[in-house]
Amino acid sequence: MANAQAVVGKPDQDFVEGNLVVRHSLSIRVAHWWVAVFFILAFLSGAALYSPRFFFLTNLFGGGYTARQLHPWFSVLFTLGFVPLFLRWVNQMAWTDSDANWVKNFKRYMRYEEIPDVGKFNAGQKLFFWAAVLGGLVLLLSGVVIWFPTSFPLWLRYLSYPLHEILFILFGIAIIYHIYITLFALGGTLRAMTRGTVTKNWASSHHPRWYDEVRRKG
Ligand code: HEM
Image 1 (cartoon, protein in one colour):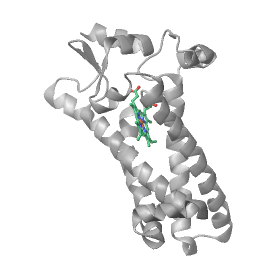
Image 2: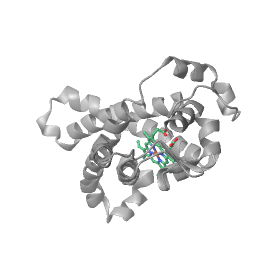
Image 3: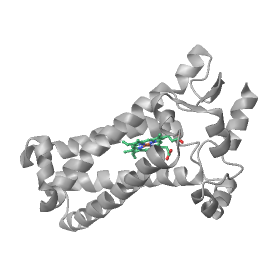
Image 4: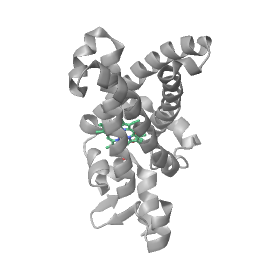
């Protein structure tokens, strides 16, 4: 993907365009929405199987049997979509000293005050990314054991069920928070994943170091 860049010689993101800043390339946005759609499908079909209280959700998938059949495939498609996101973001998600500083200033962040020295992603976004990577991996591996139970030893099956359920709940909470932050709490963030752009004001107040770097590039 980095290579669309090399071919045309022009970056596909992180540049100023008129009054806006291009934050996420088209390929990243397509991968993100792929991940979002399949996560929601996997989550709803998983919830339907998790507790009789949510069994009504099986109606969305044509009944209990099809929900059970579709759930692992939604999860596989979710994971496949995460691969390009991982490859494109992994370097930018490395932990730095300024992230430790962001964590120390977390109260200021919660009061919507500006924190200096924030690059393209803040420490909260990085922690969410790594939680999604590690949590997604454990969900996938425990899910494979549950999918093909007779291929694995009993102790692994006993371990996989609670692990899968605990991660399902934690992942659900994290994603609801992620959706709340991007849709409601931080105005102007959603367009970064729809149109790919943010305003200069958004960039300089939420990610000042990234904005400076992008501006200096011209
Ligand atoms: C359907 C609801 C979702 C909405 C509205 C949404 C919205 C967004 C937006 C607007 C951004 C860009 C933030 C920025 O540029 O600063 C973003 C980033 C991101 N999204 Fe989502 N997203 C959704 C679902 C998901 C799901 C299901 C995942 C799966 C794990 C996910 C993973 C990520 C990650 C890792 C990032 C980069 C780090 C971050 O900004 O927190 N998103 N999302």
